[in-house]
Image (cartoon, rainbow, N blue to C red; front, side, top):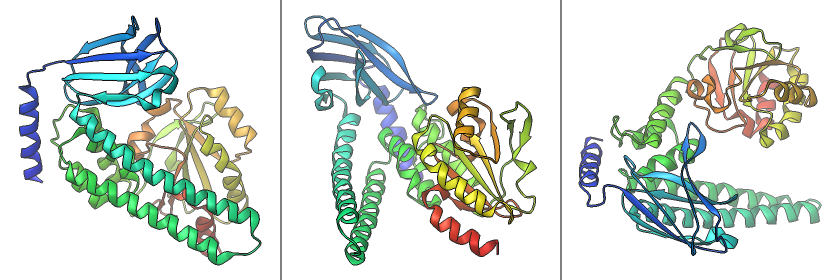
Length: 368
């Protein structure tokens, strides 16, 4: 780990001494004359405009500085985004508003790496889509070809393993790049165990200014606090009736408790609601409870979703969207997400929402 830290410090020193202490982005755009181009950067989980320019004679320019390379989004009017990494260098963007996904970007070594990574990931996605199509077609056209269906499912599992291995190898081969922190934060952290995650994160200097490095450091800390075998972390929020409620009011009180992180605006969460309702009704009188923690912002939308989906269990929220205290306390960076606590409040399952059938089988055994 020390070797990685020293290497990263050298990279930062060379970066600071670059002959380009600022970035200069020159863009050439088709089919967008007089349109406004927006450059956005993620801040507190939200893309915020950091610069804008009007297209004149098919051209636009952005100038500025970044403390280190960073992930940004470029929109032409409401069209976009073009996703790329900026750094303090001369960057060229060539894009057609009518085919924005085909944008060409040169001049950023960090972005070159990002493009190479995305190209391979798209290949995995294309393979996955093909397998999904084959599986769905088989289900619609075959009565009982279980062997063929199982073969497709095995291929899906193998593809996931290969994709995860590619990402793991990629970040280990590029330990000092900001894209490594970005990939780890947004994708890889959901697929690797905590030991592997820690090895990747520890390659970065604790004092590095990148928001992505800070995020993976925070995510690692939270992952350790909420690992399987750890006692739940208490927090206080409000009920839909605006009354204070604590997780400890239910966790560690002799019941299995499913802690469900969701939001009314989350399609995947709403799709999972019927399965949660079925699970709750099946086991609510046998020692099972659900506590749903919402990342909503609007009280009425939150209450309406609870009513519409008939989620008749415990609900709490601080109505803070992605600034909710639950995000950092429980390392929740995508929803739906759920963990299961045993009667003593110990975390015994994570990512529960990915397989409710398995959870059903386990509850059936535990709550006889």
